[in-house]
Amino acid sequence: TVYFADLDRVVRDLRSGNVTASLAADRIESLQSRLDDKVIGRRPIPSTLPSHKNVYVGVVAMAVLGSAPSAVTVWDANIMGMAPPVDSTDRIVISKRRLIAVLDGLGLLAHDTSPRLLDII
Image (cartoon, rainbow, N blue to C red; front, side, top):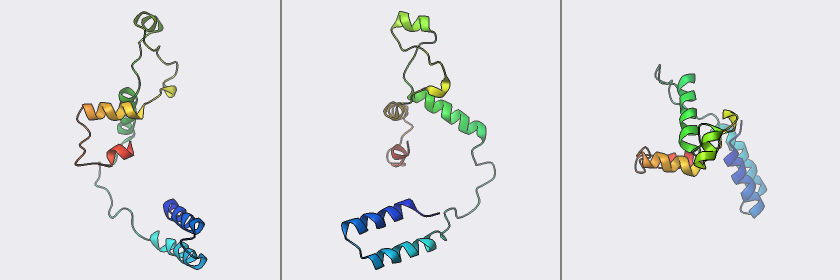
């Protein structure tokens, strides 16, 4: 396994002429030692890893919060002028912008405590 960002940086530097071939080779050789660094310092506390049910509930929550409003039946959609329900729940379109707006409106995105959460979503 190799870190993609590190290789990408070496390639960009080589193309731009910022590094010599020997320096690029040294940087690539040093990638192996970076793989020796521990990513996880210790084992997780028991019962803190997400279960299949928690992951499923999270995916459903993202679909509900990030999808556009739609009617329950096709008849309701025609009467109310809304989008009809989807034929398959595997094809629900989720809007990143809508999801972030809803989470922010609910006060679940604390910008001072977790600024990267917006990037993750």
